[in-house]
Length: 311
Image (cartoon, rainbow, N blue to C red):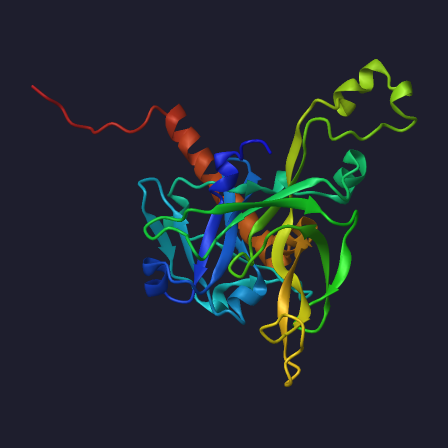
């Protein structure tokens, strides 16, 4: 496993039910991360998490790291978050101006996995994944200290997984050690050196000009695979102390299967491109362009001098 880039590690944010909880680092809440959409002259930055973290979890407060070893707390309310119009378990919120003045780390939309990348890179079962998020047993009190979890893709394509809300959520399944508190974490996939995948026709027919795209010694990625929305359970029978006999009451308990469900990145891109957000970005871009032209004109005019004389 290669060293994780600090920009990726520090894109994580934490979600809390109240400002007081965020200040004290309480155990309730969930994880999230920052996403940046580029435009000429800057970035539009959004906080991302699961819809269920905001609605069922009632944790709309965002805590993110600033420059000087302290946390910035965004005092957002539940109704300020924007949810996926098709019901996918995703929610986003544009960061307010004070937050964007902090030294932020975020995932660019240019890093999002696509179906075309999956096909071209032959990404599938066994490929390495990792996610960064909030380990509620240790998450930092004054500053977020995200933890990384590691694993592998379990199946080669996305699948429809029944969501507790009662619908089928398109998801990747990954084998990793997810726990409560990691909901909303970004999940990345990458191709490690010597993770061989042959070009069409096999290695024997590899042409020199294809070597760069098929070099088995080359590291590829990481790409944002998607967003962790939960882990699968199986039901285990409660037994007596001898470990063999079932208790008379017939009790069962849910056990973490180790399989984590991940909303694909293209679902997040759909949410980022809904009409109201596109319009806001267009207006902001036009405003920035107008300001840039005004500054350029002022510079070309040589500025303004006062009509005063001195002896």
